[in-house]
Amino acid sequence: MRHLRHALLLCAIAFGVAAHCVLAGENSRNMSAREVFALLPDTIFENTVEGLSEGEKQRLLADGQEEFWQLAEETQDSLLFSALPFHDSAVALRLFHETDENFCLAATGTIGGPLCTLELWRMDNAGRMVPVDGPPEPDIRDFLQAGQVLPRDIQPSTILCLDFDGLKAQPLFWSSSGLVDLPVAREVRYQWNGSAFEKRISTKAAP
Image 1 (cartoon, rainbow, N blue to C red):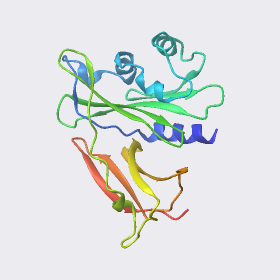
Image 2: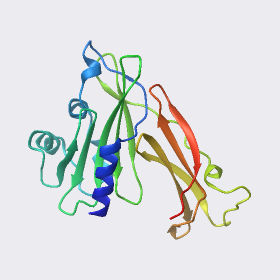
Image 3: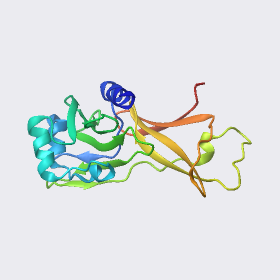
Image 4: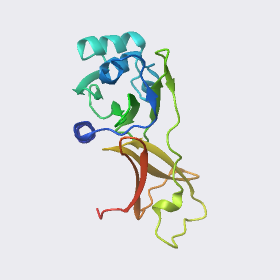
């Protein structure tokens, strides 16, 4: 339940996404998250234990629930699907809009697990959803204090996850036995400003 409450909070405040997309047609700026989700492939669910077939996806949209997923939150620009029966993970969709143009951003992402997955999409002029790249992942040094040196047996990497008003970069530290929990001094976020993502580095709050 703790993971679900966190996911609901993310949904209520806003999910992060990335990538330009031009939606075809005069009313494209008015497309809802539900309408966009109906056009997306179900590949984001391949990164979950439960999975989701196309038929299950249609039932989920129509009824708000199917065997392994429940529609937990919905707004014009966002959807949150909670995994059943334990609500210990979630999948989110978020739309962001260009401030001055008929542009939309679309992303789906997993929430609640030790690793996140993010997919970024745009609609081309033919009405097809196509994947796009997000911003470059930050250097691991962005997370570390000046002069901090990692142990020799640690291999660092970073991934991008959905966040409140953009994306949050998550540092990962790998050893020969798997993931290692190492403290970092800074947080790296990409905040959507209505036309682009701005990289912001801040001191991490004390636990």
